[in-house]
Image (cartoon, rainbow, N blue to C red; front, side):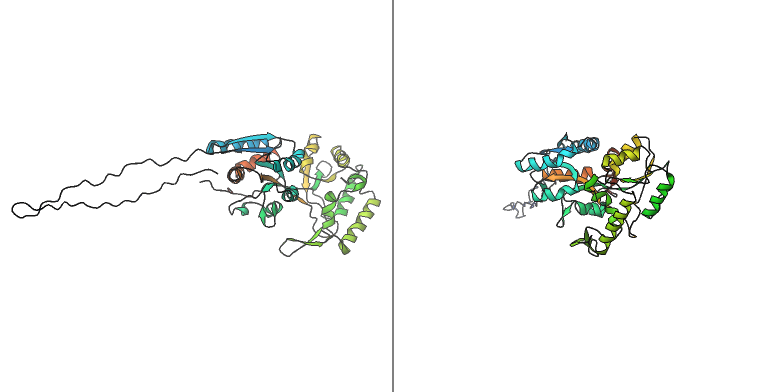
Length: 363
């Protein structure tokens, strides 16, 4: 972390030295000898010592330019060099788990919040101190990078699946009811009223989860404050109702086990369905195919709010970093800024986790 020179005031006291003579010949006391007041030497304020250490950061190609810009500002202000290593995002988790225990690997890496469990179990990640500025981030983002009340990463973006609409085929927002949306899709007259990744015969609970929660059947029950319990919530009446609805719609051809991710993306991109459920990572595939899209909330199938899983992207600090304080300073004061967060969003558009203000204070 940057070192700041703190001037120390030196306090001194001086005694007036009075020379007491033996008196002159007429008995008058001798005049005291004049003494010069001590002269304080002017000293220059001590300059901050040069910064020590360096940082190694793993990023993927998409986020490299944004992190590179923040790193340049960090080096200019602190003198600490930052090296970026560009890696495939799919490789980062495994490489981090393999290298950190050996003392290798980066000081900081970009990553997803659902890596945290394995990082904690393997002891490869350090905590991050936001200096009381957690309120500058979405609550769900802080929760995503927290374990047992401790924050283990700096969140920067959120992602969730949603209903994606082909605006040429369906110019108006979809109905709030899922079955009504399917009827609208049939009226439009495309090959399918709707497509979704079902993961083939294996199923895909992630993409279907919003429909499941609309039946009041989440994976775990929640406390009144929103925290999760260990009680499974997808059993009981809500879970059975969702299963029955799912079977009925499959029999009607609304869902198909033939639909993998690639097939669902291609069918929507080819204009063979007006609606699909997917995430922000698929938007480029659709717009690249010339499809104008809009994003709507997923309609409710069971009467309650359809609540998909939320993913969080952010930055981790290695538990073996020799510059953990420097890494924390870089994240809090140079990544958690409006400028850096805007650059990250422009490089890889996702919902920002940072809500305003500067998360840290430099000084």
